[in-house]
Length: 455
Image (cartoon, rainbow, N blue to C red; front, side, top):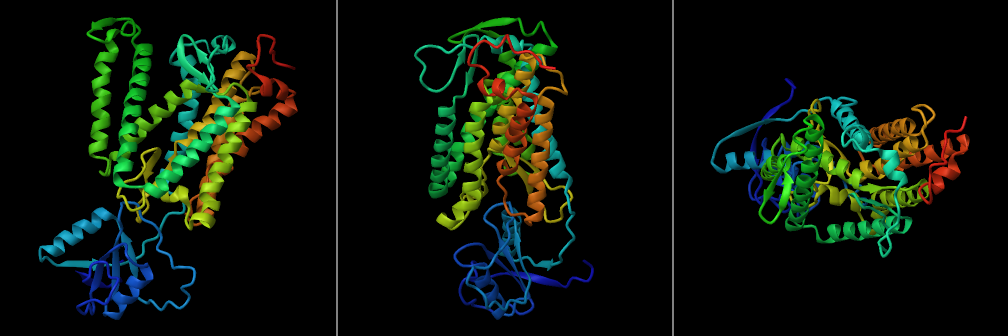
């Protein structure tokens, strides 16, 4: 870094650096905005004006590689071109607009092979699934196996779900799973074509509403488990009627928490609030939605497997770019989709975030949670059951996802490409070897009291 040359930065004119500049930039570093033309075009124009470097202000905080077009084979750019986050670019531009001088020093720091943030994200994802699987029995104190064996299909329901009378729980059907993936694909296309700041704001509001409810449910359940007396006291309120006193105190806290996250979502610490709301939301979803057997799990996860691969790898052949990656980045909106866990790369001098989508946790999590209920109902031990091995399988699948990201030099990967074989494939192989495949496939269709652990 000490050997890097220092140069003063100036604003390009025009600011997008897409046409001939009105002034010479000899021995200066040009500062330009992203958009309107290719990165190579900006670089050539800045270089022709004598600039010794080019800083491109990104339109959001996350940084991406600047690549050449497929047909651009005669590039002769010799100056360094660096993309900087939107916030840093705004600060530099504001300083230059007020007539101050900005001295820049361009250097290329070494990046760690593995940033610890990836390890933390791995722990968060695996921990969320384990916590959600054990939540009903060890936190909510429900008898998982007994309740689950008493599930019956209500007459008149044709939405592909089963409901329990004492709690809002529904079972996913094979038909409902396929319909859900189709709807998700349509919604992804709508986001891709009609992505705008107001559209993302709708998602942010929905995320906050869902996060408030989920956080409320998790906190009430957890505190009622710790302080048993609090879970029994009620108070009568207008319109709402009789409600838990605990809920009255927790709801305002959850609302304020979500609002503060929404207001400060661009702050460096905002990822903490997003992850807390997201984890609560996923735990709640995994309590409400359940897979009845691996027949339905096969339909859901196979469809999700194809969905993930298509929208990441195959969609560029049709839409000229990866639809999934473009939507996740929130291209041209300055906002990012909140439906993911993220954590900053603490030890990476280039900054940025490691992220994992909710679907990459919820879809395999449904199967892992089913394996725990199956083990309890059939009275299987930890080693001869399925829950432990599917948890390990999910952890290995997520590790393979990060390994693929590293080997593919950071190119977006469909996580379900690795997670589905490591969970659905694993339970299928184990069930076949142990002779349980028939029970696993048809579990939940009738009474399951006859399920016993085979020697």
